[in-house]
Image (cartoon, rainbow, N blue to C red; front, top):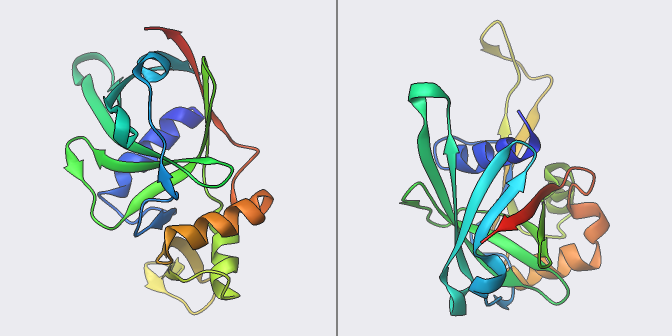
Length: 197
């Protein structure tokens, strides 16, 4: 499965399970980034998936992504609604809704960069946000899952599988923009190229 499909699957599953991820109780960003339909609307290609992007509310920075998932008779239309926000230097994408299900106080998010024909998305680094929380650089709830052997939990091998950031958006933005090289998975971006409107 390619990186884009994995990203979409993770975001979709976020609302059904406790995935290994970094979420925030607030949308991340300091203010809305207006989304001009002429720049966002259209068909975007990444690896082996095609995504349709449509601006829903330009003034509020809200866009909808739609794509076809499955094979053969199991084809289905899936979608997500994002809110694009900006910090001091960077832009952020926050998931508001997946397949018609609105999230409440649990925003999947990441850093986004966009030019006329390219969108790049970077996931937050789970490992480094956990370190930041453990050293009190940011307020968060670390969700830990005990490793198991033959179905029984053990005291050894405790692994962290997700974190919920509860700090204010301004503090999250300051943390990542001042120490950004630590807080995103720079080596694993999701890249979309615009094909046509």
